[in-house]
Amino acid sequence: MPDPNAENVDIADVDAEVEAGASGDKGQITVRVVFALPEKQYVKDLSLTAGASVQDAIDASGLVDKIEDLVVDPKMVGIFGAKVPLVQVLKNGDRVEIYRPLIADPKEARRQRAVRQAQSDE
Image 1 (tube, one colour):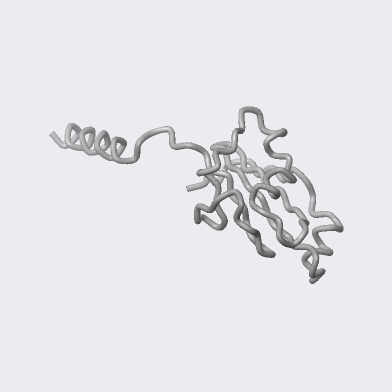
Image 2: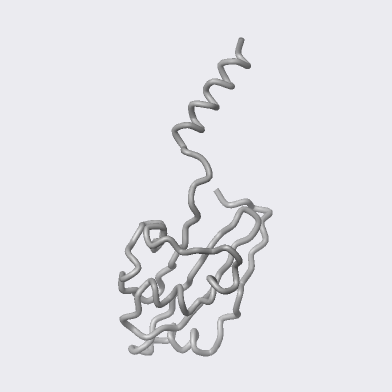
C-alpha cells in the first residue's frame, strides 16, 4: 500500500505532445510510466508512436537515468498491475509500472509475525 505521506514527483509536465496523443492522433498513443519508492513516486506521461513497447516507454521516460541505482528487471514490469514482457505492445492510456524487488519473503514475514503474536499472547 502506498504511503499517503509520500512525495509524488512528476518528472515532467504533460506537454503538448501528450495532449495531441490523447486527442485522437492515430499515429500516437499516450502512456504513463511509474516507479515507486517508499518515500517517492515517479510519474512520467509520454506520447509514443503507436506500436511502441514497454521497453520503448521505459527508455523514453528517462527514469533509469534519473533514479540512482534503478535497474529494470525484465521480469519486474507490468501494465496496470499485471506483469508483462518488455516486448509487450502498449495501448493508448496504459500505465507501465516498474516494480521493485521484495525485501522480505512474504511467507517468512507472515511466520515471523505469527511467532511474535504468539509470544505477546503468552
